[in-house]
Length: 197
Image (cartoon, rainbow, N blue to C red):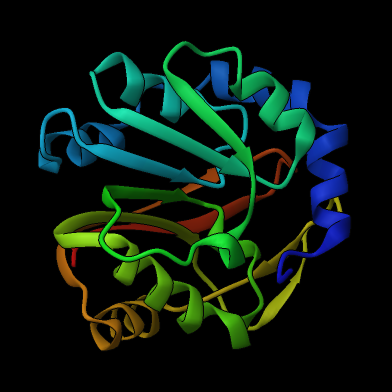
């Protein structure tokens, strides 16, 4: 498993706080763009679903949704959403070919260690049908470290992340940049990239 156990334990402990934080956030333009790019009714994986807010929105739009996470507390919340099939699984569990029309990895892969990152991208690319849609959200920065809560993060620069996606066979559709505070309260720059396989 390439996700830090301490990070998972923090998500288990803070699951209710995370739900409350997401309840205060505005509707996600990136999720709307992802939905528009998908084949209607397609099969979608929310990889690192957290409490399943995005997975629920996808299911409500008629997609066949799988929601994976390694935090049991998060999965317990996500499983309450109608039409969302949850599974306790992580990045290393993705090993199929041409399964999904879309994969949504919104600020989850930033918890993977740097030596494993390109392997995870390659597995995602293989798991998508040709032309399938991939969304990734990451915090921008250098190196790796822990936030104020103790969660482990690996940071990337924009050009580095775009290069890794291109090297794996993804073609960028749109890129969004911003700044915001998450569960720890720390303000960080972030990037989201929508691409296709």
